[in-house]
Length: 177
Image 1: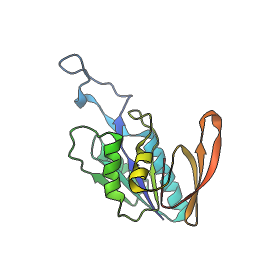
Image 2: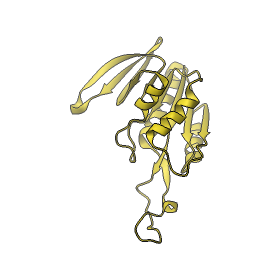
Image 3: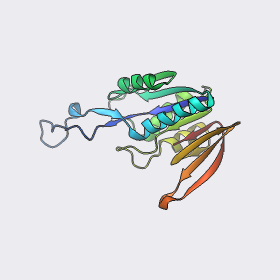
């Protein structure tokens, strides 16, 4: 089984920020970036699946913030390969652009499962996984809290509001958030 994990950097809300010289905006150079918490959860799940299903885990990140540090940490945790994607953009892209970049990269690669975080502090609607699945023509399940690998499928537990959950069987390849 081959697993791709898509990650992104988000502003670290614990660190202080500085106001720019106009006094009306945050100085972008004062912002420290860290790996999105939900993307870190996706990486941890991929590494657990690696142990249980003898999978190969590759981690992808757009180049911004401290992406290089996050990718080095992913290798240290047990990822088999990391890839930093050069976007050539001045600012972090929106989810549609990000999904298109990842889809272009992953379209011809042999992945059984693509994992991504669902939400981030700068993206509360969590649309990246669904957009990516749409661009790739793959099934998508979001708000997943449990994954078990079966032959040609994964069994996932999807969370719903109010503490409800459903168990779904999803044919591979697929995208999970």
